[in-house]
Image (cartoon, rainbow, N blue to C red; front, side):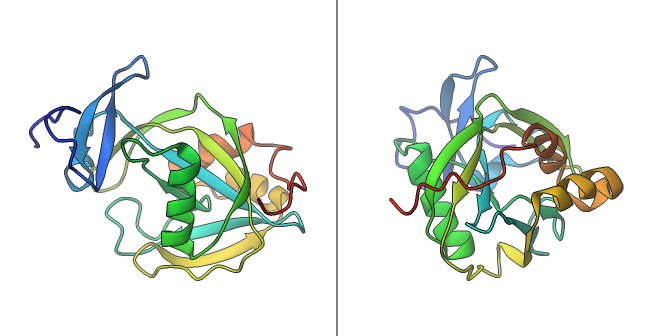
Length: 192
Protein backbone atom coordinates (compact mmCIF):
# COMPACT_ATOMS: atom_id res chain seq x y z
CA UNK A 1 0.00 0.00 0.00
CA UNK A 2 1.28 3.47 -0.76
CA UNK A 3 0.39 6.91 0.46
CA UNK A 4 -1.66 8.86 -2.04
CA UNK A 5 0.31 11.55 -3.83
CA UNK A 6 -0.96 14.75 -5.35
CA UNK A 7 0.54 16.79 -8.14
CA UNK A 8 1.19 19.57 -5.62
CA UNK A 9 2.62 17.35 -2.88
CA UNK A 10 5.23 15.47 -4.89
CA UNK A 11 6.00 17.20 -8.21
CA UNK A 12 9.65 16.13 -7.85
CA UNK A 13 8.96 12.43 -8.40
CA UNK A 14 10.85 11.54 -11.57
CA UNK A 15 9.88 7.89 -12.07
CA UNK A 16 6.19 8.21 -11.47
CA UNK A 17 2.80 7.50 -12.96
CA UNK A 18 -0.05 9.93 -13.37
CA UNK A 19 -3.06 8.79 -11.37
CA UNK A 20 -6.39 9.32 -13.10
CA UNK A 21 -10.03 9.90 -12.17
CA UNK A 22 -12.57 7.60 -13.82
CA UNK A 23 -13.52 10.46 -16.15
CA UNK A 24 -9.97 10.48 -17.57
CA UNK A 25 -8.68 13.59 -15.82
CA UNK A 26 -5.41 13.57 -13.82
CA UNK A 27 -5.70 13.46 -10.04
CA UNK A 28 -2.11 13.15 -8.82
CA UNK A 29 1.18 11.30 -9.02
CA UNK A 30 2.52 8.16 -7.43
CA UNK A 31 5.97 6.54 -7.57
CA UNK A 32 5.88 3.95 -10.38
CA UNK A 33 7.48 1.31 -8.13
CA UNK A 34 4.54 1.49 -5.71
CA UNK A 35 1.62 1.49 -8.14
CA UNK A 36 1.34 -2.03 -9.58
CA UNK A 37 -0.14 -4.08 -6.74
CA UNK A 38 -3.23 -6.18 -6.08
CA UNK A 39 -5.16 -2.89 -5.80
CA UNK A 40 -3.60 -0.83 -8.58
CA UNK A 41 -5.11 2.61 -8.92
CA UNK A 42 -6.25 3.83 -12.33
CA UNK A 43 -3.34 5.57 -14.05
CA UNK A 44 -2.18 6.83 -17.44
CA UNK A 45 -0.11 4.63 -19.75
CA UNK A 46 0.31 3.96 -23.48
CA UNK A 47 0.92 1.10 -25.89
CA UNK A 48 2.86 1.44 -29.12
CA UNK A 49 3.08 -0.83 -32.15
CA UNK A 50 6.13 -0.28 -34.39
CA UNK A 51 5.98 -0.87 -38.13
CA UNK A 52 8.71 -0.91 -40.77
CA UNK A 53 8.56 0.15 -44.40
CA UNK A 54 8.18 -3.53 -45.42
CA UNK A 55 4.89 -3.67 -43.47
CA UNK A 56 6.07 -5.90 -40.64
CA UNK A 57 5.21 -5.17 -37.00
CA UNK A 58 7.56 -5.60 -34.03
CA UNK A 59 6.33 -8.11 -31.46
CA UNK A 60 8.32 -8.28 -28.21
CA UNK A 61 8.52 -10.82 -25.42
CA UNK A 62 8.61 -9.24 -21.98
CA UNK A 63 11.77 -9.95 -19.97
CA UNK A 64 11.49 -12.75 -17.43
CA UNK A 65 12.45 -10.24 -14.73
CA UNK A 66 9.36 -8.06 -15.38
CA UNK A 67 7.06 -7.75 -12.39
CA UNK A 68 3.88 -8.33 -14.42
CA UNK A 69 3.36 -10.76 -17.26
CA UNK A 70 7.01 -11.89 -17.41
CA UNK A 71 7.90 -13.80 -20.57
CA UNK A 72 4.63 -12.92 -22.33
CA UNK A 73 4.61 -11.70 -25.94
CA UNK A 74 3.15 -8.24 -26.42
CA UNK A 75 3.10 -5.15 -28.63
CA UNK A 76 6.38 -3.38 -29.41
CA UNK A 77 6.55 -1.39 -26.17
CA UNK A 78 4.44 0.14 -23.42
CA UNK A 79 5.05 2.74 -20.78
CA UNK A 80 3.88 5.62 -18.66
CA UNK A 81 4.22 9.30 -19.56
CA UNK A 82 5.63 11.58 -16.90
CA UNK A 83 4.06 14.79 -15.67
CA UNK A 84 4.78 17.58 -18.17
CA UNK A 85 5.78 15.14 -20.92
CA UNK A 86 3.79 14.88 -24.15
CA UNK A 87 2.81 11.44 -25.41
CA UNK A 88 5.21 11.73 -28.41
CA UNK A 89 8.04 12.58 -25.97
CA UNK A 90 7.12 9.61 -23.75
CA UNK A 91 6.96 7.30 -26.76
CA UNK A 92 10.38 8.43 -28.02
CA UNK A 93 11.89 8.01 -24.52
CA UNK A 94 10.53 4.49 -24.09
CA UNK A 95 11.43 3.39 -27.64
CA UNK A 96 15.01 4.47 -26.97
CA UNK A 97 15.19 2.96 -23.46
CA UNK A 98 13.46 -0.38 -24.13
CA UNK A 99 14.51 -1.02 -27.72
CA UNK A 100 17.35 1.40 -28.54
CA UNK A 101 15.27 2.65 -31.47
CA UNK A 102 14.32 5.96 -33.03
CA UNK A 103 10.70 6.37 -34.11
CA UNK A 104 8.80 8.70 -36.44
CA UNK A 105 5.35 9.16 -38.01
CA UNK A 106 3.63 8.58 -34.67
CA UNK A 107 -0.14 8.39 -34.83
CA UNK A 108 -2.72 7.78 -32.12
CA UNK A 109 -5.12 5.08 -33.28
CA UNK A 110 -7.11 4.03 -30.20
CA UNK A 111 -7.33 7.19 -28.07
CA UNK A 112 -9.93 5.80 -25.64
CA UNK A 113 -8.43 2.37 -24.97
CA UNK A 114 -8.55 1.39 -21.31
CA UNK A 115 -8.23 -1.95 -19.60
CA UNK A 116 -7.97 -3.73 -16.26
CA UNK A 117 -6.28 -7.13 -16.03
CA UNK A 118 -4.89 -9.33 -13.26
CA UNK A 119 -1.76 -11.41 -13.87
CA UNK A 120 -1.10 -14.86 -12.39
CA UNK A 121 0.66 -13.35 -9.35
CA UNK A 122 -2.39 -11.22 -8.51
CA UNK A 123 -0.89 -7.91 -9.65
CA UNK A 124 -3.41 -5.65 -11.36
CA UNK A 125 -2.92 -3.45 -14.40
CA UNK A 126 -5.54 -0.68 -14.38
CA UNK A 127 -4.81 1.81 -17.12
CA UNK A 128 -6.16 4.47 -19.38
CA UNK A 129 -3.89 3.46 -22.22
CA UNK A 130 -4.11 5.23 -25.59
CA UNK A 131 -2.66 3.11 -28.39
CA UNK A 132 -0.20 4.43 -30.96
CA UNK A 133 1.41 3.19 -34.15
CA UNK A 134 4.86 4.53 -34.99
CA UNK A 135 7.30 3.85 -37.78
CA UNK A 136 10.98 3.07 -37.52
CA UNK A 137 13.95 2.71 -39.81
CA UNK A 138 16.35 1.56 -37.09
CA UNK A 139 17.25 -1.90 -35.87
CA UNK A 140 16.34 -2.89 -32.31
CA UNK A 141 18.96 -3.09 -29.58
CA UNK A 142 16.69 -4.30 -26.76
CA UNK A 143 17.38 -3.58 -23.10
CA UNK A 144 17.64 -7.02 -21.40
CA UNK A 145 15.63 -5.87 -18.37
CA UNK A 146 12.73 -4.99 -20.67
CA UNK A 147 12.76 -7.38 -23.64
CA UNK A 148 13.68 -11.08 -23.72
CA UNK A 149 13.06 -11.66 -27.44
CA UNK A 150 11.58 -9.92 -30.45
CA UNK A 151 10.25 -10.76 -33.88
CA UNK A 152 9.17 -8.74 -36.91
CA UNK A 153 5.90 -10.32 -38.05
CA UNK A 154 3.22 -9.77 -40.66
CA UNK A 155 0.06 -8.12 -39.28
CA UNK A 156 -2.01 -11.11 -40.38
CA UNK A 157 0.17 -13.38 -38.20
CA UNK A 158 -0.79 -11.28 -35.17
CA UNK A 159 -4.48 -11.73 -35.92
CA UNK A 160 -3.92 -15.48 -36.18
CA UNK A 161 -2.03 -15.52 -32.89
CA UNK A 162 -4.92 -13.80 -31.10
CA UNK A 163 -7.32 -16.43 -32.47
CA UNK A 164 -5.13 -19.54 -32.09
CA UNK A 165 -2.98 -18.93 -28.99
CA UNK A 166 -4.25 -15.96 -26.98
CA UNK A 167 -2.53 -17.27 -23.82
CA UNK A 168 0.84 -16.36 -25.36
CA UNK A 169 -0.05 -12.65 -25.51
CA UNK A 170 -0.53 -9.88 -22.97
CA UNK A 171 -4.18 -9.16 -22.17
CA UNK A 172 -3.89 -5.62 -23.55
CA UNK A 173 -2.57 -6.95 -26.87
CA UNK A 174 -5.44 -9.42 -27.13
CA UNK A 175 -7.89 -6.52 -26.75
CA UNK A 176 -6.01 -4.08 -29.01
CA UNK A 177 -5.11 -6.22 -32.01
CA UNK A 178 -8.63 -6.86 -33.38
CA UNK A 179 -9.32 -3.10 -33.22
CA UNK A 180 -6.10 -2.41 -35.16
CA UNK A 181 -7.06 -4.55 -38.17
CA UNK A 182 -6.01 -2.67 -41.30
CA UNK A 183 -4.17 0.04 -39.36
CA UNK A 184 -0.86 -1.74 -38.73
CA UNK A 185 0.92 -0.47 -41.82
CA UNK A 186 3.37 2.32 -42.57
CA UNK A 187 1.96 5.63 -43.73
CA UNK A 188 5.09 6.45 -45.71
CA UNK A 189 5.86 9.68 -43.89
CA UNK A 190 9.61 9.09 -43.62
CA UNK A 191 11.78 10.27 -40.76
CA UNK A 192 10.83 13.52 -39.08
